[in-house]
Structure formats: C-alpha cells, structure tokens
Amino acid sequence: MKSDTAIFQSFTWLWPSTPIHLAIIIVVALVARWLMRKGIDQLIKWMNNRSARRPAPEVNRTGRAWSDIIGRGAERQAKRTTTMGRLLSNIGVAIILIIAIFSGFSAVGIQLTPIIASAGVAGIAIAFGAQSLVKDLLTGMFLIFEDQYGVGDVVEIDKLKGTVEEVGLRTTRIRDFNGMSWYLRNGEILKVGNVTQGWAQSTVDIGVHQSEDPQIVMRVIRKVLAEVDSDPEFAESLLEEPKVLGVTDISNGVMTFQVAVKCVAQTQFDVIRTIRRKIKDAFDEARIRGGFDDTRAKDTTK
Image 1 (cartoon, rainbow, N blue to C red):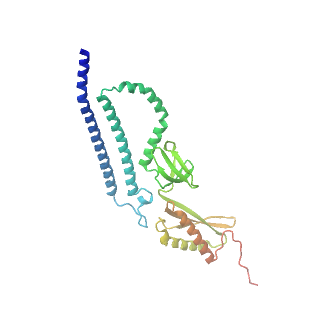
Image 2: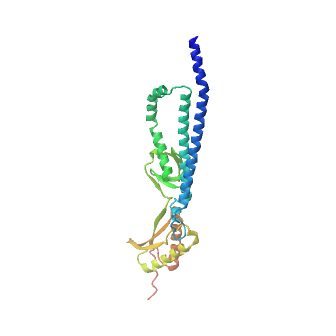
Image 3: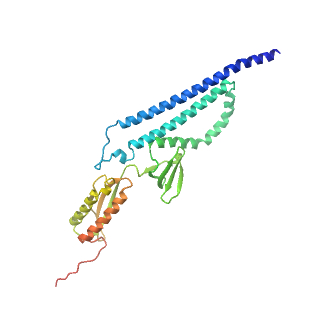
C-alpha cells in the first residue's frame, strides 16, 4: 500500500509540472523561431540596402552598367541574398525543432541517452551512406551563394552544354541544345563554364583574292563596321566599336582580314552574321573579289 502511495505521489509531482515545462519549451521555440527569422530578414534587408548604397556602377559606351552586363547586377544579387536567407531560415527552424523535441522528451521523463547510444551504430552506418547526399547539399549551398550560375544561364559542365532550368540544393537540371533534360548531382560538379555571365570577344575572318589592294579592302570593311556600330539594333549588344585587325594570313591565293567584336555574352552571333552579310554586299558593290573568285576582267586592248 505504501508503494502505491509513493507511486501516486510521484505522479502528482510529475503531471502538474510537465504541462508547464512543455508549454515553456513550445513558447521558447516559437520565440526563438520568430527572433531567428526576424534577424535573417533584417540581415537580408541590410545587405540589399548596402548594395543599393554602393557608388554608381561603371557603365559602357551604351550606358549599360557593367555589373548588369556580366550578370551580377543589383537585381540578381538581391535574388541570391533572398535565396540564401530562406535556406538559412529553413535550417534554423529544423535545428530549433530538433532541440524542442529533445527537450520535450526530457520534460516528460523519457531518457534519450540510451536511445541515442543504441542508434549510434546505425547512425554511423547511415552517415557513411549519406556522405554523397551531404556533399551534394553543401555544394548546392555554395553554388547558390557564389552565384556560379543561375536559371537561364548557358553553361558547360563536364562537356555537357545547355541552359540551366533549375538549381536545387541537391541537383541541377540542364536542358541541352537537343532538348534533352539532364539532372546533375551538385557534388559531382567540378568545373563550370558560364558563357552567359560577362562578355564575349569574337573574331570574324574575311577572305579576299590575294591580288586585291589591302588598303581598299580595309577601307570598305571599316565603313561596314561603322554602319553596324551605329545600328540601333545592336546598341545593347556591342560593348566596343568593331575593329579590323588587318591582314592575318595570305595563303592559297586568299588574303585573310580579321575583324574583332566585343559583345554582351550570347548576343555576338547576330552581330557576326550581320557583319558577314554586309561585307559581302559591300565587296560586290566595290567589285572586290572573294577568296576563291578566280575570274579576271577580260583584256580588250589590242
């Protein structure tokens, strides 16, 4: 009978305090969660405001900011900061939840030490199996934080070229130029080539017959390049005025001139095609023979 009384007394001591302990744990967890998210929001706001207070960015001759040209403008930085803030918030919530659950078990008298000890061996085995998953998650965090590439960028990863459609913590989805969708584990990505962020320097080889006057050819090419440079269609593409570098090769009856263009990445192809077409039309008008044109004006003198 005495033992029953002792048991009853132990329960009367336990139950009145247990709900209070649980309530305190829940309140503390909610307050910690609110403070953490509030702090992260303030941090994001501070970082965005600091970016906005930076000196005016350097602009190119068309008035475009170089930071926007290379894909690291204020808008993209704000998106990256927000993404990292959400990620840190989710991680923080998970940590607070785990601590609250463990504290709740302790409050109701459940000892977790034996459970944790018994699960230690299983945890080690799982840890070995989850190494690749942890590697993928950590790499994904750094990919987002360092802004190595983003959705819409054209990249080359392990000889795979395509457009980034999704960047996750574990995988990256890329659609190649044949329309096939590829899923790459972030932990296996060692090298990334991004052809979207930045500018592209391209050269165009123009071949004419070796008997043509180089000065006349260069004069015609410069006139075409000036027309392309002043074309409003390419005002947002060309970063510098196209230049003719002169004669770069003479062989097999062909004299080759080289033209250099500097454009916003992924916009150089239209510029190059237009330059080639206009130069061909200008050569025809000036009667400059192409590299493989062996026709000769007939000599009518006697």
